[in-house]
Length: 158
Image (cartoon, rainbow, N blue to C red; front, side):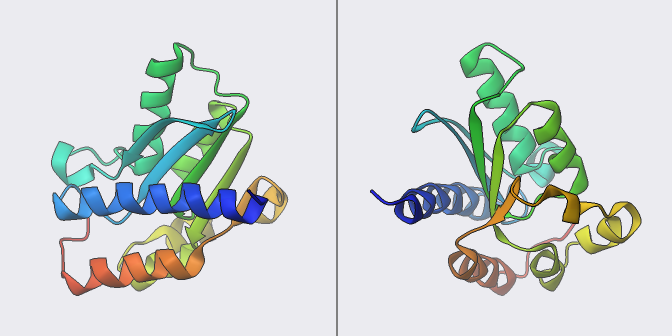
């Protein structure tokens, strides 16, 4: 399997995780999988609406699940795949957890197209240009299809 095929496989799992959250009205179209040594160790999707918790983003949910499964707060050696470029909260959580790399589908700008305000925080905090090699875009077209599906449902944006 090529590296491109591997990225596509894990991003598809993140998309499926996001779709589960959307269909259950848990929150936005953000799904995440965490991979270590070629195995998915955890997944999560946005549960902000379901939990009434502004921090229940897909990445945070997956990090919490991975920590429990691996019985450690140190996720060194793990790679995270997520349908939307992480907000600053999630980005910093990934760094605190020692995630090795992040692969995301839709960009901060794409998040704005469906009503999310990540760009506001990005303007305030910036700094993403320093993270080349850590933050990597893959599967954008497939994730844009997911975002389009979400937008068509006219769900509550928090």
